[in-house]
Length: 505
Image 1 (cartoon, rainbow, N blue to C red):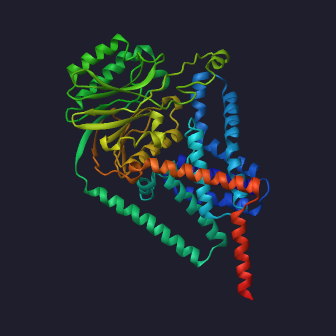
Image 2 (spheres, rainbow, N blue to C red):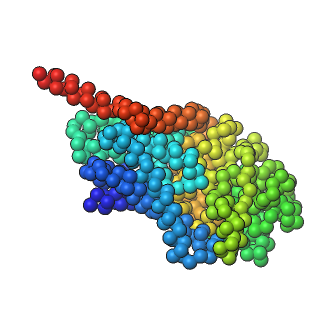
């Protein structure tokens, strides 16, 4: 029965990734898990591994689509390979639960558990940077009041509060009383009072600008057919008819199926932009560069005069999508010839006509640390995306959109997303959003500029330092107990027991 509770918990914590409006189920997700651990303290590592395996399988099963698309392998083989991957990654969950109950002497304390999970999430983020999938906070994008906390502490504060209150609910249900209920009420009141206060502040902003997005709904095979190159160029140029009042036209990631930088058709397109547009264009393309051996996933800023003003090359590449470890082995066992892209090595802030913005290409929106290096210069964020290689996966699209919402609130900068086979639209600095309709390929979006810097973006480096220190503290506690037998938490409980006994005399 305990194993069933663990599986239920893993599924509850993922429900909102499929159905975003069910975000409150995440708050209940730890209750059956903690009950299973509290009910029986044996096999901690195996229980933690089982939880991690089911959790990751539910969170990341959409990876089957790009692997099927690129390898041509039988879907059963791909499924088995993914299950092996999730089983291996699930080991870190087993290690976490084993370490937590070892350090804290088997005690389920909501505060300690939330701190432990925060350290675990941070270590995952840093050590398994290639796998930015399965974080709890992406389930909360629809909870606009709660996510306002992200401007104070980013995804890390949201993670801590979410896990703390979930664990506290467990203690309240099974072991609590009126004091615990009153405390929970006070914490919830403070959190959501702050959220409402911050949401009302954004009603006073008035400076708006208009941007035009070009969105497409092409499958991956349609997108890369050579005969479609002319159609793709014409499709982009038609945006000129919709963007007369806009400050910028934005296309999806890799919106051309030829090398914009080195193909002659790129020069022809620049000439056409000069003739057709009165607005700068931000164009996504896989393109070569004289300083790199490999092609790059790039975003080009093109002036209305048809000149390339700036270029940003994607820094964080997707493993087994843009970057292939053991590439030679993969090429020898599959009919597909894998070719990795090159990674950019700097963040670029685009500027044009007194506006400045930062671009996150596709999966870069999943990373909280790619922003905040120069936010004083940034007026808004752009996310260009091509999600066709995930075969129209709702879970993937929900995760990408939720992450865009979180980046907007963390930075207090509006974000505009232009995608292929993706959710596109705008997210205001408040986290409130508007998705564009799929019945049109050109959309004029008015975004409200925010002059506020969030506390999180202003002091991001301090949060990094704090998280590293907290991680170091947990490691020290583990080593002290393992090698020196020092257990401060057990000692505290013994002292408390002695004092209680003394008072009863």
